Image: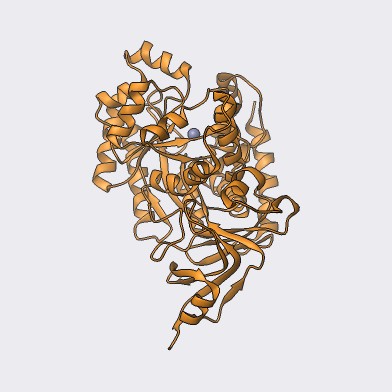
Length: 439
Ligand SMILES: [Zn+2]
């Protein structure tokens, strides 16, 4: 039988095709045209496919790349600038003064550093919202990562635009940049109920419908937000969005910490997606999102890191550990949010949040977005259950291989798409710039 010639074949001692499937020992994945063509035992794949490029991973766990459902990736330049402060002090005295002086080049370099961090930690795709997002698009394009991008829209001017009308021009430009790109999609991202107006939210949603894109905003992040919303608008944030008709299957709500039981049912009924950000919620003392109740009701929930200013990293392995442990200690129930459910959130759940359901698992016809953990690290031995290791034992430091769209972008500590020494120099310059502009 003639073998099918393909782009590459990735071989590994162990393969976990998806969070819900069994592992396959001595496995291989055939990749062509940026997609997975087939996976299975090494002997079967090698009998069916031939390639000049065979990637031998050895004793690794090959698995779907993790998907970060909520990030502000360019904010790496603010990492550790100001921690352990009340939210408004932190925002008004430390974050906003720096952000007022942002340029697209700063955003580009910050995002490039964030992309490097993510690929070294097994994340292959992310859902991003920030100022001057064109700079993030350049970083995603250059680094080989995958992202759903959005220019954040407020009811006030930003370094990206002067008026609300101009903000829509900036958003449309991002759609032009991402059009027909295999790894980038644009979306519409008003910041939140409290930093927009009902008119702005409605206009944003109309554009998302016109573009058939994701509509993404922060919502119900804390009790304080709910109280402010009740005072100013007479409704809770989710009720406000409901009244405006903005709870739909294209709607992604970030955080969703302060939800009533009725709101949980409403989010499920309307097909909204929810991004869970446990480390940011803990660090800002926002509260504990009712994830077991959401999943029990049938909600689509993904996992995200939020920006590094409130995390302080983009590590989805660490985020998975935190997600599982937080629910257990909150419910005083060790059976709450088991490892398999957490891994599903960080892969297929997040993929659903991005409206990109082909991501988050390894299957024929899906983008070849994969990562691998080195099983020869001491903390990975022995291995009885792969999802358990991903959530509880792995730290992200075991990642030795990351592939996006069939291209290997990270291998054994080397960043294959980036000039990493130059990037480190730029990161040092970024911190000098931040010091000049922070209070
Ligand atoms: Zn956020």
